[in-house]
Length: 162
Length: 110
Image (cartoon, rainbow over all chains, first blue to last red; front, top):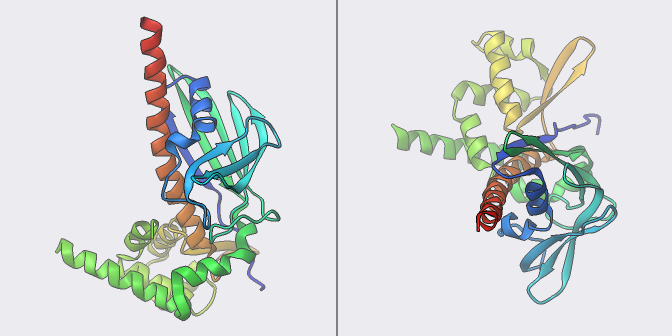
């Protein structure tokens, strides 16, 4: 394929009205309190995700029946200011040890609170794995079918608004 | 699909839809797209920006020109999905962190 796809990193910032150390702890050891429950891996029926508190640690989900599913690992553990995780899930939400995309999270004290900046980068590494995603979003018709679907939906929403 | 809203709003504009349709024929520069449509170059640039933010197109530099193209591998969709995912996750994280801070505050005051 001649066209190299390099999607821009996903960048998000949020200000939390909590001290830096609390923000870091809730992000890591408290991840079970906020991680979206609808997102879990393969057959794993989510109990809660776990981030081990050390560089090289695991990032995984513990299932209700006790089994564990890998999400990735901890690349940088530098509390309370910085965390870097490897997100090793393919677009169809399966763990792939050969895939490493980086999620860097920094915690910066600001007034009485903390600014949290998140960057999820190297998404182009998912390129070889994106076929499954494409299949699941566009079906056998590929892009034209997908575009038509969105166009129909957009038109119907416009119709509702009129 | 959790990223559908952003994509739908990107495509809600008929001109923007035409811009995207042009890219289905192959990678194009802003000027080439503008030549084919009754729209100014700045307007085309603006539409491309929205399409890019929705993850529907990507761009790259070729010499001094910037070429836009539809992402054929679904990475744009993946990116849009992750964008939405982290948005939701960080909103929930903010609530959890602030609840935790409040709990600590109350304990301190006792």
